[in-house]
Each structure stands twice: as C-alpha cells, then as structure tokens.
Length: 369
Image 1 (cartoon, one colour):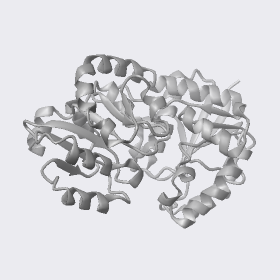
Image 2 (cartoon, rainbow, N blue to C red):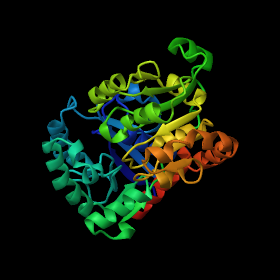
Image 3 (cartoon, one colour):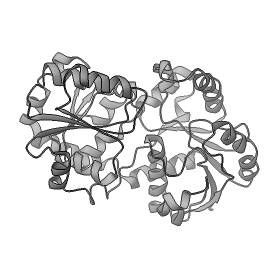
C-alpha cells in the first residue's frame, strides 16, 4: 500500500540556505532515490520553491502556499489554518522546522535539528526564546516520531523533555555526491584572493558568537604565527560580525585573515580543497555538516569537542577541547597524520550519503505509521 505523506516546508524560505534546510532537503532527495512507490509525497512550500530547488520540484508533487514573506507570525497562521485543512487527507505529516502547528495531522514526524536555545539562550531574542520554550515541548509531546541529525541531539531531547527513547530516532545528514565536482580551481582562487604562496586554513561559517571565530584569531596571534599562514573565513554576517572584525584589527591580523561574505558553492568547495585544514572551533552544532563536506573533499579537519562534533568527526579528524595550548601544535600533528586522516575522512563521509539519509527517513516514516 502506498502511504500518502505531506511535508511541511513552509518554514523554508526559497533562495536561503542553512544547515537545517539542507538537512531536510537532502533527506528528501535520498528518499526519492530509494522510494519504490512506497510513499506518495507532497511538499507544501512557499512561492519560488521550484525555481530554487528544481531537483526536488521535479521529484515530488508540491503545493505552493500563500506567501508569508518570511514573517514568522504569518507562517504560523498559515500552518494553523491553510495547512491544517490540507493535512487531513494524508496518512502522515512531516514537519521539518522544529515545531508543529496545533492541527498537525493524525500521525506526524517532527524534525528537530538542534536545541541550541537550551545551551545558549543568550543567542536568541526574548520573543524567540519564549516561543521556543512554549512550542517545542508541546510539539515533541504530540509528535508520533521525532527525528534528529545526531545522537547528541537525540539524547538531549530524551533528557530535557523526559520522553521515551523509542520515540526519538536519528536520521543521518546526507552529503551530496556531486560536492566539489564544479569547484573553482585552486589557481583561480589564489590569484583572486592574492594568496598565491600561502598556506590556507578555512572556516566556512556565519559569524554567530557560537561559531567561535575569535578563538582562531587568538591562535593566529599567539601560536599559529607563521606569516605564510592565512585564515580564510567565509559566511554570512551574523550577530558576532562586529566583534570579530574589531578583534582582527585589535590583534593586527588584517594581513593574515581574509573575511569573505557568503560565497557560491563552487568557491566554497574550491577553498575546502586548497586548504591545509578546515578548522571548526564551534561551541555548538546539532550536527556540523562542514566537517563531513571537508572530509569528502579530502581536507583534514581540526574541530572542537563541543556538542555533536566528536560524534560526527569520530576518529577521522583531530578533535580538541577549546584550549589554546591544546590547539597550539594541532597543525604539526595534522601534517604528520595527513594521509591517514584523509583516508579515514573519505570513509567517514561515505557513511553520510544522500541515499543513506533517505533510507533513514523511510524507516522513520514506517515507524510513525
């Protein structure tokens, strides 16, 4: 029997990409790859979805909702009214944005990418924090199954909300096999960024405080002092942008730190390929997809030991507590182990394929039904 599944993507704003968006979209891509008419999937989306996500628009039926223009209150209203009516005809509704509307469907899957607000409430506005504290517990209670990207988030939910372990399951991140195929050439990037003869460290992350960019600046100033070594930071301007740029100037690192805004995928992949290491000192990750993307491209990883990162990196990278002294010799350690880390990283990345992610999602759907 074919099961009718509706997927609530109203929280996804077309043209904008983030970790939680990529997580669910790749699951759905994987589901399409393995689906043998077991699931009849309909996506509920915002206008512009087909243009920005052509592959999924071709793979699944989709229905465009009235535009909420990115206004959270309007999106919630649409979920409580317009989507609630649509949900009645489905065997299962999958809500991918971390919360569920009051009328969510008879059987439901709720995806929660992370619960950062529990660990770092200071990173959220008062209104957003109040909303999450009220709505997330209610959503978890009403969901048939809750899916997470890591065992770390799974255990956090079980502990914090006292829910049955059987109700919370991990769906692996899926990393696109085409990653890096169209990467910008090393020569092009080096010429454009004027780093022809430099060793490059790369951090792809928006400048939110929990991404911990300033930790790397301290390292560059006190331990990683080789003038031939540069740090390239690429990502959107977050809440920590002003402090980060101020710290670069204060430490006189203008010549050794290159700040790029969000870059196109081809440039990001090219920077990962040419870097001697992808450095990721984050204080909090529900998963941490960039470390697996680096591994797939053959780039060694140096990561913090915070949140889900030790679980995700495993023994395929260098994982360290956030202590400057412990990171001081990390580049030398990496150089001595580069071949073994590169090989282990590729094996590790293969575990997080798009098809494996789709397989996990299919199992979740079966369990919910």
